[in-house]
Length: 285
Image 1 (cartoon, helix red, strand yellow):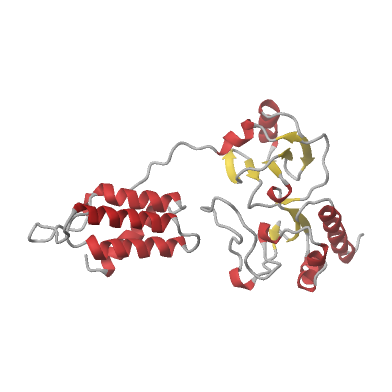
Image 2 (cartoon, one colour):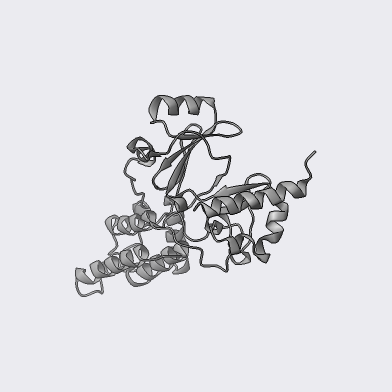
């Protein structure tokens, strides 16, 4: 029987070898879960958020966790901070996007059969339940693109299962198209969620341009938020309602524009509705 300590040292040796070949790697604990190395953002996504168009390096003290922890630096892999992680490691993972790769994770036999009938042949790695098909090229990661099929590339990690067989093939359009969805239909609150018009029935603002400029600036504020999207959306809704909520000038079109900007940043329709309702409540509207 192989001693656990020898297995763990072997994980570090594997990681160092892969890093030398340009593959960003990180240790995995039991259950194929990354170690939470960064107390500043424990168990949360780091280095980017789902709504961000371009992932970036982890901004927390290195090494962080998840895909953001993956590195090719042998000094980091051998660092004192990661010593405990390697002692407990149950496996090695890598960041495919960081190596210019995309992994099509096929979770069962039916998914493998689908890939063989649909996708061009490429490097194949056998996994516990299915296969990893690895392509040369980077794309957005997505889970559940079809039954038993996940896409792992940018802002994701895949467990190292060995070098696989067959040469790499360029990432095909058939894989890229798996994450293309129908255009989003933005959901805005109904007419009941609009503030009532002032009793006098007139707007105190001098011109409609004032309201239009306010909505445009609010949309820009939401669209330009790079972090804390929930807070940015709520604060923007609050600002719009505090200025325009009592005169009754806001229309469903105005609110739909605000909701569209928020949902384009990753907010759900429910979260938008909650933020809108909370802002109304706070202002007594």
